[in-house]
Image 1 (spheres, rainbow, N blue to C red):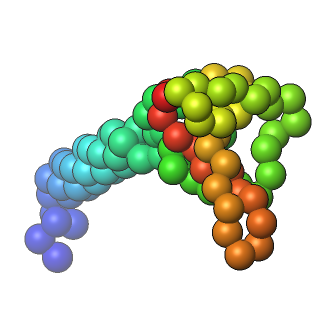
Image 2: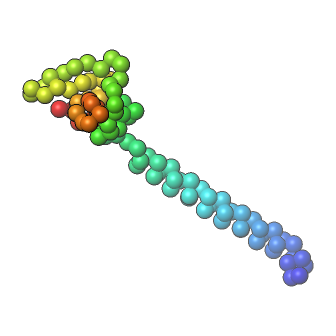
Image 3: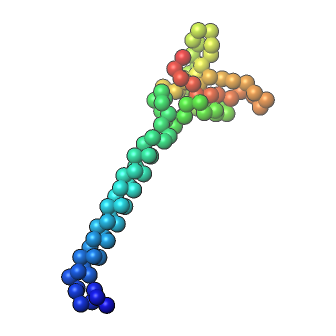
Length: 98
C-alpha cells in the first residue's frame, strides 16, 4: 500500500478525482440546458400552448372568426387557426399569420 505511507498524496488524488467529476457534471448540465431551449418553441405563435402546424378537434373558447382574402380563420390570443374538413368532421390547424 504505497498510498497509505503518503496520506497527503492520497488526499490530493481524491481531491483531483472529485474536482474532475464536478467539472464533468457541470458541463453536462450546461449542455442539457442549452438543448432544452432549442426544443419545443413554436415560432410565430404568441401562445406557445398551441404549436405551429398542430391539429385540434375544437377551437379554444373565445376564438373569434376572421375573414382574410376570402378565407376563414379563427384567432385566439394571437394564435391563428384554419378550419379543415376530414372524415370525422371539422378540425383546426394552427397556421402562421395570414
